[in-house]
Length: 403
Image (tube, rainbow, N blue to C red; front, side, top):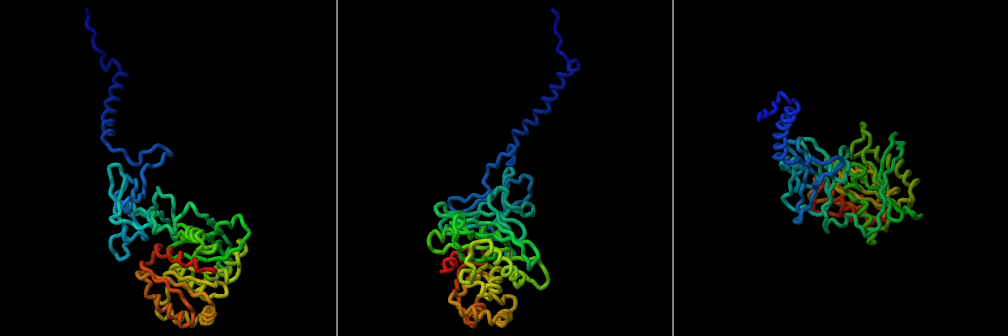
């Protein structure tokens, strides 16, 4: 019987191609099996499966970010210092993260983070970026922050509560005739406003130098603070108008002594709000307050305008921290207005943290007001120039209004 010779590769090009394909695929398959799966390997439109921010049972907080191609990643925040160092005094800035085999970076704070609301971002190879997995964000004057809320009883006063009625926050645009541009403001209307006919008192509430018009809601939680106080019967229902505290730059209008903001507020925004919302349009039902730069605006355009703002609040701001002569100059420039303010029954609300870098400006400012006969309510707290304090100042201030 004749023996059958095996078919050669030369005789069968198809067989040769098949064998070459197997040789090429086998090593790749072995490599794929050995290589870890990337944290970025998800099907189209399928969400990531990791949590970017996770409070732990012991109060610490874990941060995560999928960035397989990054060389260095850290969490950065001005609000979370010292849990995430801000580097204000030149020390470490941010909390370095560690990469696992899949490209997922993570770090857990060394200490528990108190219940509150905080802004944070990630720094990826030197570039600051918001958390791509976050659900809430807050604009700065320039740029965007991610926002996290650490739950707990200490922060309950400023958190969303399911069992209370909630107001509405609207973004409005108006034409500023004094500035020749279109401006924005955020307006909180209390529960019941949308379906009612009642008119309400108004608080004008201004943010700080690094923030924007949405800061008092997105990170300050002014709307939730008001909701909770109104529901508890501790504050009267009111409209809260949160303007943009910055104006187009020009010579003569500095960040803190800014007559352009004052003109826009009194000549454009207040009339716009009174014309488009159901307000009680008189000084007895109109108040003004602000933090930091917003506190400077309140000193300059609220305290000195008792004809427009019957009640005022200054958070974390004072006069004379750059030049002590500023205190006496303010008093001389506004002597008539301060005398009118002194004749009013309601004191100026003034709040400052003992660790605030502006703390030294509180005493001369309070002394100047006292010398002018202006009554004050001074709230001195622990802590510094932070939203942790400003939310609590607002929660203390709102129940004092319009009673």
